Amino acid sequence: MLKKGIEPEEQEIDLTDKTKIPLKRVLGLPTGILLVAGIMIGSGVFKKIAPMSATLMSEPYILSAWIIAGIFTMLGAFMLAGLATTTTASGGVYEYLRLSVGNFFSFLYGWTAFTILGSGSIAALAFVFAQSFNTLVHLPDPLQSIQYISIGNFIFPFASSGVKVVAVIFICLLTWINCRGTKKGSVLNNIVTTAKISGILMLIVFGLIYSNPALVEKANATATVHYSATALFSALFGAMLSAFWAYDGWANISFVTGEIKDPKRNVPIAIIAGVGIAMTLYVLLNYTYMKVLPLNQLAAISQNNIAAAVVAGALMGKTGTIVISVLIMVSTFGALNACIIVYPRIYFRMAQENFFFKKVANVHPVFRTPYVSLICSMLWSIVLVLTGTFDILTNLVIFAGFFFYLLLGWGLIRMKRKGAIISKVIGYPVLPLVIILFSVALIANTLMVQPLQSLAGLALVLSGVPFYFYFKKKYRSSQ
Image 1: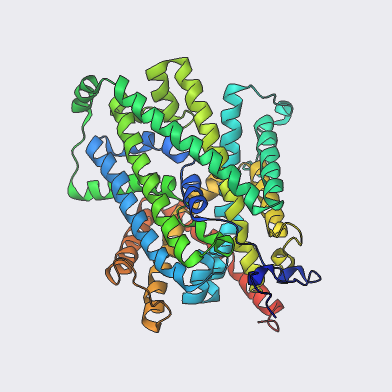
Image 2 (image 1 turned 60 degrees about the horizontal axis):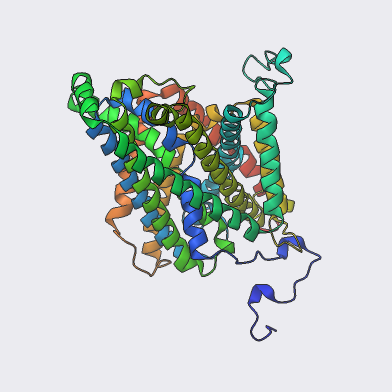
């Protein structure tokens, strides 16, 4: 019997079965919005102007790539907002796929998130954070003498040992904080995300005030490239891949649906508002880059350098480089914390549905957090940090994300036709069809332009197939 005035999840709980302990709904709408923005605004917006300039060499085309990618990201946000009304459980995209297209495809998404996308994002953000820390405070490299020892001439576990140690320490620290309460992790996220949005706004204002657009436009006039329609289409899609990497993470707030207050209302609003904030900042910041430096200089920035640091250095000298290094540290730290909060909720939900190791569904009896899932995510992320393969893995499967967006579009149509979604969905039925067609076009273009990387990414996703049948057989009686 429910006690008067107490929420169902606050009733007396049987602590003998940790898989039955509910999560606490402690995250409000402002935190949801800042989680979306905090995950999206990582390191991509500070780096991707360089490859995009090299690909397009045109200010209008580059801004168009950011705007088009932002529009399609917003369309995806509208689509997810519709699906978010179907459930109040954790898991987000995994749960929406499970309900709309079945266990097989939802498991492949969850498997890809655990092995590559989620853990790889955590590893990559921790590594970039440690690299930025290293530019300010030089870190020792205790294993430098054995840095060339490799596994298969592919994995170099002892390379950049000082940076890796710092990355591992911060993954462990943030995991510990989030194991001790979702509220603690969310407060930290709110503080850091507010700081990095403020820092980006200051960089935009300072850059536009002290830039010299006349000189830049004169230099750009001699560097403009003229494209045929086919070449422009391919180049624009190539540049949008870089933009989509920076926009990535907009759907991740849905993973913590089980801990958000009034999720059917707040999850859609948080996604749309967070994407809107990130899109506005991205377009303005890239416009600022191109008003400070001409496109040929931006295109010449090497992969080892951060474009934003070069731009800040041109504006403020060494002081600018230090300022941008601090801003990138704050930005990646915030995105790292947000990713550690959200991704383990997918594996937690998979375990609840008997498609992952059962103990991963355990909830801490005191802190009410999915602590086993958080620890599993931490351990695999550390492995990826030590191997140094996380960037390669995440790059291989960027295009695969659009395969799952395609499935979400199909799932939205199915759920609408079955009557499972009764609320109005913005843009339906045109919206999911546009998402499906755009995803098909992007996947096809990526397969043509990067065939080996795309097929390798597909192979990594499909590596989850035998594990799907393993879990299905192991827990058949429970299902």
